[in-house]
Length: 254
Image 1: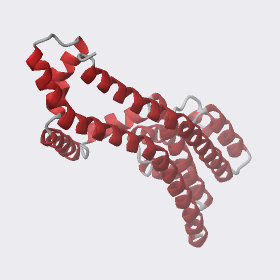
Image 2: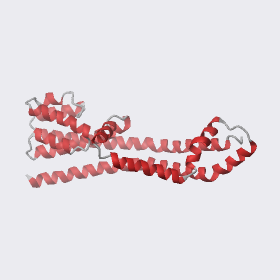
Image 3: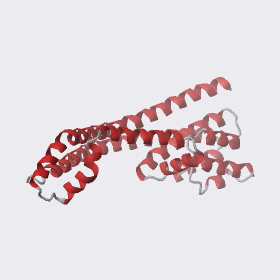
Image 4: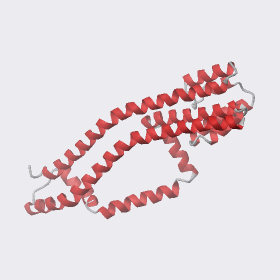
């Protein structure tokens, strides 16, 4: 069944790539807005801020508390672009060094599955991806416990992989799939019910495929809704930051 399995695997990888492109497309807009905001604040800090600082120093008047905090803390830091680049470079280097470490990966995978907004995207993406792989493996004749172990290794998230391995161990010991899925955080209630029904009807691979399609569509709808919310929020954030900076700089003059 190698030819049929490879054909289904190609469709699975296409669906995975589509989901990744949607996630990147929805996150690129707020990332661009954030970069523009930081660039604008950086430019104002290096060109406008030094001139106003000299004017305030000549008059000897006390600054408002918000302006004083900015001029003492954030302002000097942003007025030196080399400091910003150095800090970003250090953070990138630290990330490259500690990212391969097992405890760090466990922590990041756990955070991805617990943050409110990230959890919705990551959870549906993992469920769709792992269910599609399980459908391919089981449909190709791989025993259910072995298929669950392979899916856990290919999930891309250690915490989610451990949940799948727990289900695998229970099935290997002779526990029915219905009982192994009960209470498992790897599968929500509706997905669990579909898989139990597929197991009873002896079409578990089709049930996994149905779960994969369902959560792929839910992920697309979730990303579309988030895009509709994130775009105006990004504009409001940009306006709020610029307004705050203008108040910090021009507040003492007013």
